[in-house]
Length: 156
Image 1: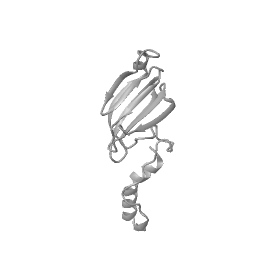
Image 2: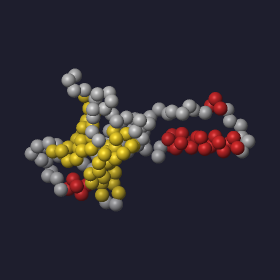
Image 3: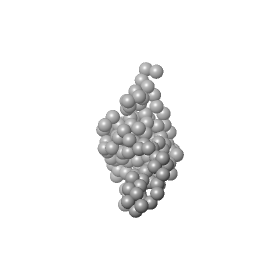
Image 4: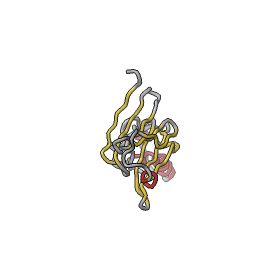
């Protein structure tokens, strides 16, 4: 968990303890209840591979026990991962052709779609989000490398 998020979560507890211990706290120095979300591409502790559409979805790639995982989450309104829409592992990817003849839907859930492209790359299409946009992230492998992103509003 990034330090900033940890501090924000612990602030009410620290404030309460300090008040009970007789400490002096300048209440005007305590931040109000909301914090600005950090773009995952600018936050060192955020493992999302998508920088766009972060209020709508998050795609994570990580390795554990010799297996690589690709997880897609539909984000909550506060910016934290909500429910997992789907998971694909490196074992699942090993069963796919290196480069299919046609772009192929691998899995989908909660308006987040994972495709294998004819180039062998993986692509997530997510949306439409509340802003009407569809968000697209393309990368190679697991964990993700050579990532690119775009977004569009249909008909524009």
